[in-house]
Image (cartoon, rainbow, N blue to C red; front, top):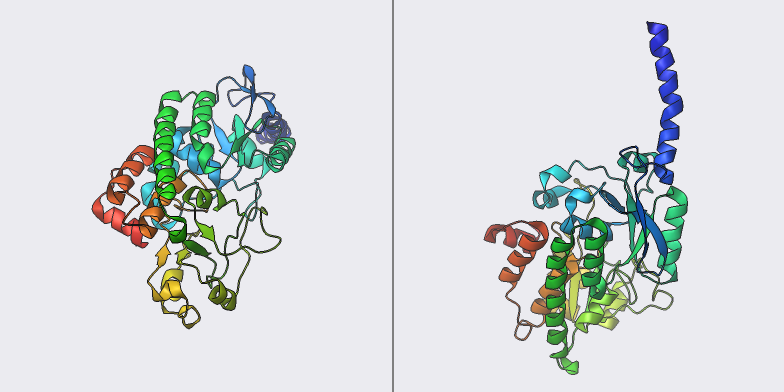
Length: 368
């Protein structure tokens, strides 16, 4: 009997890697059968063959994961990073157990091929710019995994089209139209609100992040540039060699900030772990190196809300729509025209199926 069991284990050790390889190359689906396929053209102009029925997706980075979670969380094969801390109270309990599979961008855990095979996504969604850089990234991920990769435009103004396309691909058209229609209507309101601000009254901003608050996203950063353009806001950090570089996070000095004198400081206290607690906002308000900035003197230091995902920048997901409303209301309270309590409740109810209480809204806005 013992010899027979050892023989079975040897067979399993031989067969399992072969089965994983077949999953990775798309020769079989999670059901063990070859799935019917269809050809599509993605937002980068790439011709991609995908299963006609997409039941499970993996996103190459948190931009897509956040967007898909709002659309069809039951379709997610996994997170890039596990939701952490207070953010978990806004995530459905049934999804907190999904595996963290890493990212194909920037810093973070590069996905493990075997773990991806076990998760068995039908496709990988690559959210990036639809130009050559995005095409190259999507092609590279496909070469690494053998799984069909669909390139999606991450930009805030493309989001309605993104949701409609995802609705078609994933068979959730009605839900997708709800999100796309709402998103388009709010974009129009934001554009109108930005146009209404006289040019001589438009604000400049500095985005503060990192342990000392001196790391930032410069002009051209994929995290914020398209949203700042939408709102007609100026980023004071225009550094040679960083425009269009993508990830951002260069460091600046207190002396540079004194020269630039931004009208407002936006504090990003995002974290990806349960044990990391940041009070960068408080440190800026009380720190001597910040005290001579006009924004600090004028009380124009604002903490970017982070739950369940950042409202503005990291990642640059659909949450930026709500973040853009919040920012316009914060910087131009007399003219923006947003009732933020009502807007927050509506957004969370639609995108996350959560009916927020006043106490929860206060906690989200204050970082509590």
